[in-house]
Image (cartoon, rainbow, N blue to C red; front, side):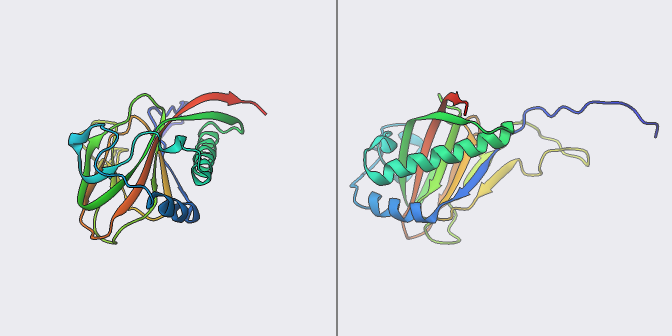
Length: 204
C-alpha cells in the first residue's frame, strides 16, 4: 500500500478512573453506623431507588474530621485524574454541591440515571457487602450503536460493570448513565456518592 499522509483525531473519549483507600472506608463505615438514616431522606428520585436508605445530600459538608479527610481525598483524586487527562500539573478548586450515602439492603437496586449540574461524579464503596450477590455499578456507553463488525472500535456489550470492593473509588463524567444492579446479599452494603464542580484552575 502506498504511504499516505493523514491525521488522527479521537472524538468523544470517555475517561473513568479508579482509586483505592480501604483505611478511609473503614473509618467512614464506623462513622456512618452511628447515623440513624431511614428511607430516602434526600427526597430525590425516590421512585428509582428500591430497598435502600439514603442520607440527605449534604453529607460532605459536615464538619467532622473523617468527613474533611474524605473531601480532601476525593479532591486529590479528581486532581490526579484531571492532570492525567490534560497532561499537566496544576491544582484545582473543587466544590461538592451534592453528596450522600446509601445503605443497600437485600434486594436493593437503583434504576438507570445520570447526574446533572456537575462535571465529575464519584462512587466510593464504604463496604462491599456479601460476595457474589450482584449489586454492581453498571455504566452504559454514551455512544448509541446497534451494529458491530470486525472494524468496530466499540466494545461488544456497550456496558462497563464494576463489582464493589471496600475502599474503591470510581470517578466518572456526569453524562454517563449508570445503575446499581440488584443486590441480593444479606449483609447491608454502604456506598457514598458525590457530584463535583471544578471551580478554578490554580497555577503553581
